[in-house]
Amino acid sequence: MNDNKGTIYLMTIVIVVACLWSLVAFAKTPWKEQLQKPTVCGNLIDIQNYYTSMGFEPSIRSSTMDGFSIVIWMHKDYYNNERIKFIRVLEIDPSGQIGCEIFSGNNVEFNSNFWGSMKLQPKGLPI
Image 1: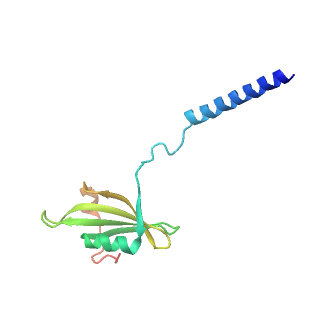
Image 2: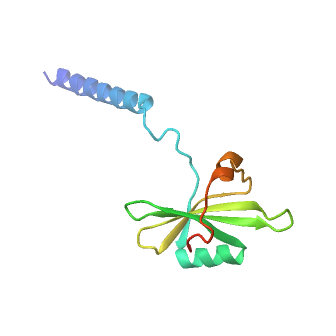
């Protein structure tokens, strides 16, 4: 009886490990396509001052119902007909204390069909 007990325990462990391995190996998660890159976060006022000192201007802002907001900062190329040269996207927490740069890039492309027909307010809103 004791010899069979050890064999049963061993077989149970092998079956459990095999099941766990198959679950992990063949699991389909919604995070498969998630980008693996670091996010830079810090004091919001410090980040805003840094962006301003580098010549970036807050250009587009949007917020969610749970309080998070996104601000898109753009930098003009004054030597190339004031075209947008760099863009940075800043996510702000609901308390308004922490900002995280979630994107930074220098290959800025615009859809001319959209921007050509879009009606912007002449003065806009302060960001």
